[in-house]
Image (tube, rainbow, N blue to C red; front, top):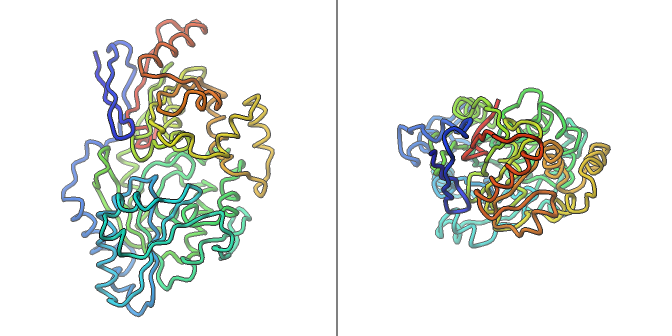
Length: 427
């Protein structure tokens, strides 16, 4: 028997499969990579040796204020390690600099005080100045140009008015931006809803280049690069993490050069070849990435890349916060026909995008090809409203999957397992 342990919220779910049923196991090499130094030392080294940029302490000199864009509660960025060093570097170069930490919520809900403490530690959470970005607050935004897509590039005025704008984040495969990190802290991180909607239009999401691991020719990435430049993002500190959310590499410096260096490192570790199977079991990497169904679509796309058409994707995600977006949920719930709903989304122009349609579009893309079963803490009715099937356990999901396939004449299905669906690039 082959024993698996899958991340599920803050816990693990174990199950077994007969060896003869396992077609393959797709795992990022990041999970076996041994970092040469401690997490704090890796970040310190990156800051001491910035790529294509002066040191942060040099950039801080002569500046009245600095805004640090920081990822929100949905991202496993180890801010408790990165942020103290960023603050120390800034104050080393300029003890009097006024620092604001701008939480890049993108289109997510606001981060709570408890989540700030968990992310940064009590000292920083209670003594530093924080601003929570709210993309729907038009009065908080200012235009800084026009995106290549034609959309108005509007960002949080706190960032736009900064003498020095920097960001922290992490680099992982992303299901339509290609890779996370770098420029993504600005768009969608601190962008207006108007800008995000233009960038996440159905035309761009439908592009074959808007896929995991692809940057070249990716229209979503190109918009994001423009936004970061227009915002005058001067310096980034991005890390790569393993399955335990531990830092294994760090890259600091120029917003593009440092990011691309990190992307190259991650691409070498994350790339795996598909192992086609009738059933693919995937996850969203556990907490905090599997807090809701919205986020869990990412892990499903890894399964999409290796599941045989007409097969079954089993997504193991806690989703303790439920669907993660009312608009996303309603897009699916109100769809009498997935094909008809998809046609309606694809017919919308770049400036006609509605909230969360991109996530619905990607989930619908998969639902048109596969049966999706969720092993989750989300309510069964919610899952079924979204045209997926609900299972209380992996064994139940496998029984349901085999029943679905048996009706198609597949009686001995093979299974591919992806223990961390957001950490791999299946290509």
